[in-house]
Image (cartoon, rainbow, N blue to C red; front, side):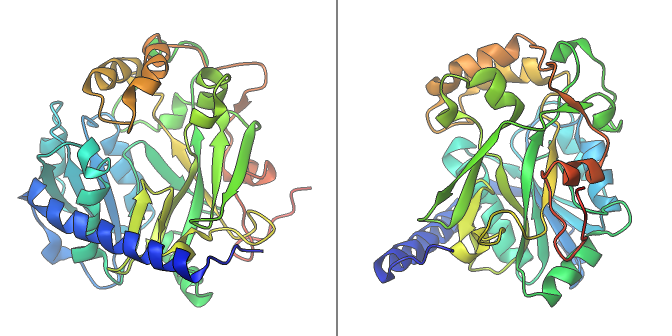
Length: 345
């Protein structure tokens, strides 16, 4: 059963939510409009929110993927890119762009900036909040777009849709492959770990904390508690009183974290195909180690950055070649529920 917080606990969470909203309001001065096209947003549009930095390689496919899913408008904060990302996004007719002028780390890793935009533009809309290396898929996604999915969620009174972030990787050293902007990332990142995941309940926020997968296997075998968090809530019918707490891993009010039923992940859920391990990943790791902007305690992750910078081979004998959403359902990595009943056997 879901944990029921005490009256005091609920009060503390409500206070925390208000503090985070106030913090985001103060951070609004750190984002400067570069190309604001929000007048094109329609009442029923599904909106995509993201903070990006030097993502000119991933963005062409990222934008196309979410357009195919039915996204109506993108609201993006560019964190001082140097690779042509800003020009690429300025040229897109369905992208409103802001430049983040402050510290990514000090803005709660971009979440304060996005909260400003969600408060102003997201209220009442179904919103997708993702990174540029996260591609949301779900049961039957190639035939039924996000408008169909969100209509189904609305009919059942579900304000959110959860997803597992699934690390995709190539066979062989990461940097030894080639990728062309606009190419389907899974042409290069053809493999994933089907097993080796674990979860624990976090009563305070009411969410399952999910870890494991390829990066945990490769880099955190002796310290699994530091392995990346894989549970996310990318799709939410936004209300201006909502706020993400730790990236999109959890949110307030805590009801948003219940993207599972009492017996586990039984509600419909998706997968975020994580394209971090494209060929540029080693060089990005070297840069991000020096910037120290991605973790609250960056020194704790120096070995992680060094190992990734060495262009490792993630492939092993138990690696599974990616075949599509039906395969992920059979493996229990995403669920259909009433949205897409599916017999694993």
